[in-house]
Length: 177
Image (cartoon, rainbow, N blue to C red):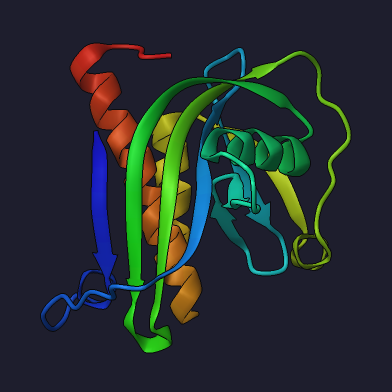
């Protein structure tokens, strides 16, 4: 099961890990597969970066409901959750911000509908694109190497870790979807 803690020392490869105890935000995100077993990445055109679909958990919403809502809003697809992959903690020391993400593996259901992006997502030029697992990891690596924003580096590092975990599970057990 995915259980990872991402700290400033991990992202920036220096110093000792430091952890934050007060949780600032919960999120739900993960891997969405299409019928060809390709992975959806959200392309942020205005930043030239990729991330996995997902976002915050609203009040009175389960982590599963949040994930399926975020997938529908960002990609236009309904999805079926195949499995819970685990969680990742992002300990952002500079911001004194602890973000816990619950991670899922899901597959698209039915045809693509309309997307419902937030103003921020629209301003970033959000659009989903499909990749093989190796291509998705490569896109995350390129995004990390070209990013210079503190918070976004945590997002990208987190999403790369989710993809790498999925790839390891596929290599170990075969197609888990």
